[in-house]
Figure 1 (cartoon, rainbow, N blue to C red):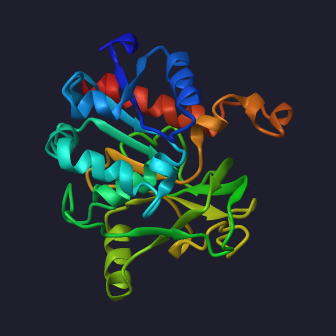
Figure 2 (cartoon, rainbow, N blue to C red):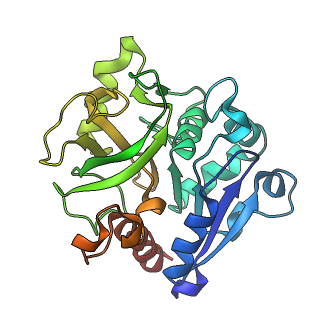
Length: 268
């Protein structure tokens, strides 16, 4: 498959943002992304099977009432959850960034422990430990992961990406915390962890939300559903970085998105 044949659905709903950055990033890589409003899928005007990837962007979908991402997830769950399950089983890609990560948690597609889809969420993204909105650049480290499209980034690499969220503290139910965390470690589902610039795992403010085990991004067991709180689409072009003039190599966002494109070309 050629790059131009790769069709990517950038999902929209009232309150989402960063769609344009995401669309431009994938266009820059030669693929064919397009905006798809959730109503177009739920009402049958467009079909998931037409696409190779679903991108759920950041923002404040549905005003983040009830819980962050809950309204977006509920509108998908009652109408296209079976289509989403099939999409994932076909090893296509689902990527959720920030609010999109929250949506995937609410849908039960992440962390996906022993299942592609859980009727009830297996984890949560709680309010930040600082009890405030955190909007700044942070450092993350790439871990050994089963994610199918992060091969462009070396294990142990430390890089900066921006965050902008109030509810990003990754948590498990207390009674299942040890079991679930160990399961994710066994299956290499923890893809990114918050660190300082030297790569050390430290608490707040280096861990900006207080996530258990400094978790910043996770994938499902199959490796084709990935959610993260940092924004790779806001770290795609080097000029987006506050110190871009010091580094002429590919940005972490570009490496991540290029990995997605490479995976889809080989797979389909």
